[in-house]
Length: 115
Image (tube, rainbow, N blue to C red):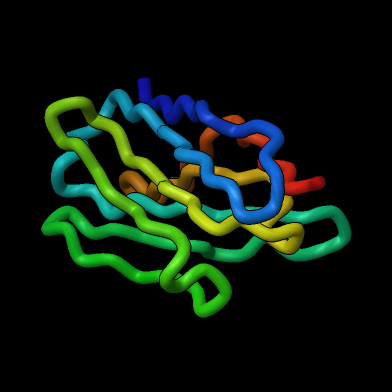
């Protein structure tokens, strides 16, 4: 079955870095557009970044220049490298994919940026 399993969240100080991972199974991963969303308390879920099968990338203005999305098709894994983190990046981060018209979400991983 289709599964998205996330890892890599945690507590980090302002200015620090984290790398999130999302391991995908049950699909032909190399042709899938993969997305990262985040949701902070009291706020709507927002798209942070996406990467298409050919490697093209999109970033929300709030993270452009600080975050990098990448993929390793041999490992069926998508990554989100987050640098120069600030308090506004605190949220639950979700990996996301659409397959046969169905939305699939990772379980969510908490990222907390605090001194």
